[in-house]
Length: 500
Image (cartoon, rainbow, N blue to C red; front, side, top):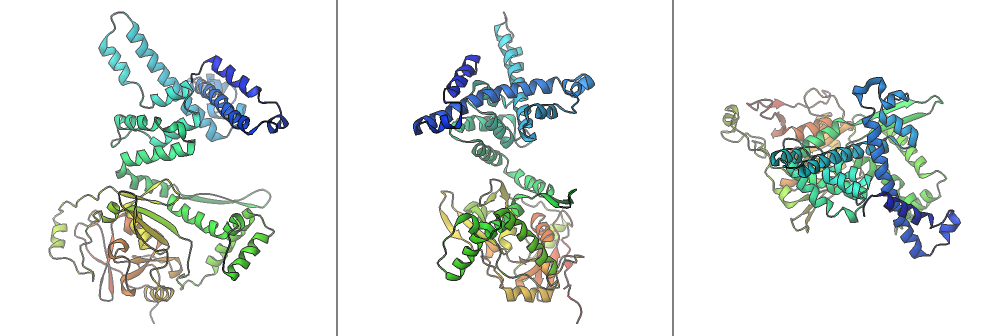
């Protein structure tokens, strides 16, 4: 397919012949319906290409250096995107997509024309041509595919956003090679699948950056609660993939009987599912009521109680190589005694081997998770670990049952009095069970003495920043990483319980 005016006219004519009303479309045979949908998609792709060209033109004529003489400013808008959104009625995301893809196409077209002119000029300078070629952006193949009509604007933006930008670890050459392989297979993929594939390629190119992107996603989290003029209260939030998947799992478990029509063999569960199906509330209303109920439960909970019941679980997927990857030296044996010579080595500042780049995935979420997050999630109690070999065969199943029983967790709450971290005042109700012996390394078979309570932020900090907790008898010690204390001076973690 090309992208000439004739192509557009032929595509729109083909769509016009399909009919001019719902009744006309209903009268089409199945084969005509399928063919017609493809014809509409082709026409839309050609129109969206022109929308991107126009969006780039408006953006260029509204660039900041033009000030009040810019096109958008002349029309009373603070940005070209605001002007385009007003004219088109599109969403803000769609407008930004048009501007980004259109600008990419315009820059590629300028670069290609410079090269073409240099090649056609008499006595063309090879050095000049090479200089022009070097300036062609790595995204140029994306822009050319959109211009040719073989790639939609949505797919182009998915590739651009998924592959990301050039940085120290990912060069233009690496991104160009990844793009070449991706463009060879996008014809059979939709925009969502294209984004997942592009993001997967980026993660393979920059596995070392997974932890940084994971931290950024965690830092970007927010929840805003505000009152509207009519007295209603609105929530608007953003969660990192790890917490977001848990939220989704929670609400899926609450609303699934209403949505899925699950058939239960157990009579009691069947009756419960029937009550859910017959509930006069909408699914969204059930979800809203459930959130309020969860907040009430949390607000009324006994601060000295550790929640020990079953909770919605997420599944962590990792390969055998990730499971066997070397971990930072904990410098202590199972009882917490420092290994011989280890303190001296730390004091001398001996280099610590870099942790190998490895990652896993939370089922259903395309964003990879780092080794540290895998360890922490499998250390906590609501996660199932599924281990694959390099050929994709399952070699081990974890479990989503709590590794500490409710009675054990209650006993830990009494013993620890809350989060054991230094100067933390979180109660047992807000704490998680941390395994001193790693779940992956020791298969999770730990006794009560090998578990301590940590609140979620400190549990996160411990795994991500390589702090460790060790035990000598009934005493627990926090061991800082070498970046915090080269001497690894142990910090006592006394119980927070009230003195009897």
